[in-house]
Image (cartoon, rainbow, N blue to C red; front, side, top):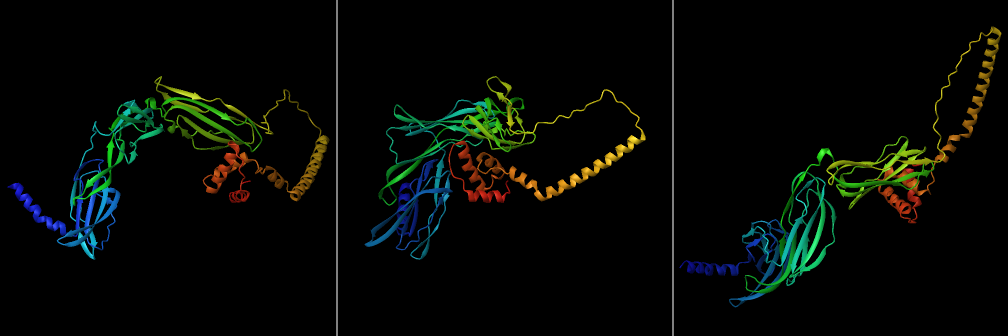
Length: 476
């Protein structure tokens, strides 16, 4: 009797559903995380103001479609439009009613509920994702390998796929391998290895990886029509967590490194730059290494930001000095995980000779072994006084003459012209432009010069732009 009552209620409400102007429905009211739901609107009418829907249940609409149906009801032809919106809900929700204008009248849809259950791994699924870590406990900055395996059954038919890598918040990603594919029985396996290191101490979680797969299905809607559709479903990997400890003994670097420094030349001319390259190679938190910029008295130093590429860090430094100088050794102190000790490595000092540099003057004080005191007669004193006055007068006349000559010739202008650098010397020009690298035009000019100097390119420098830059920053 209870079932008869339900059937009677459905039959009673069915005419209302048939003649309703707008009816909303979903193909699945209960899904797991990662599965898609199709939300459909059947609208009866000739003039439909199609709603613009971008999100449903706080999830983005993945795809949309529409179709027009013509049905005969009670001897009359009725025209209806079905609008479909596919989305992937992340949590249980209620799709609230919305207003749609049909034939000039505002109609309201019915509310719907969608239940979303937690994702679970099915060992019999067409796709299996697995995350593996070679270490569970490690130090901050210590590298380790995270391996992702994606297994796909040979029998699975895929229209499209979207891969979402695991979120690695709190980790440095040092390297990501190219995907490796191989056959494993009934599965095709894709393997990707991430080399990462933790940024802070504590328990850090690695969220699951995800792959969304699109397959073609024939589905029947609530009106009994079959239609081919593309349906998306997501598969998730397991979640991982690692425990990281602070680096012992107050060290900031951890790993095993080697360091070297090289220069492009050891003998230069005044105002010419020496280009230094510092390289650190090894496994560890290279990202935490600070600039190696040295301080050298009476030498201008220009440093670029250290660049990390895999297991190598490189920094370029330019030095300009008028006198010969010494590049000090560059050192690095770190905690070695192999020896469990704090170790220090350093480069050798490098001597740079500047041609034409003035030798350093040594101050020498001569002390007479014997000091003789002579008693001079008054006539001798008078002669010495007269000579002193004569010498003073001569020195005054000579000084005045030299002053007039200097004012007329202005030799300092000549010196300034002599000190002005040759713009054709691209290395020197590159050094002069470094302090103004934040300017986009200067940066563009520096890129051309760097390619010409270090990559043997022969790109022509824009002379007009160069002249504007030199005048703008008064570079001489």
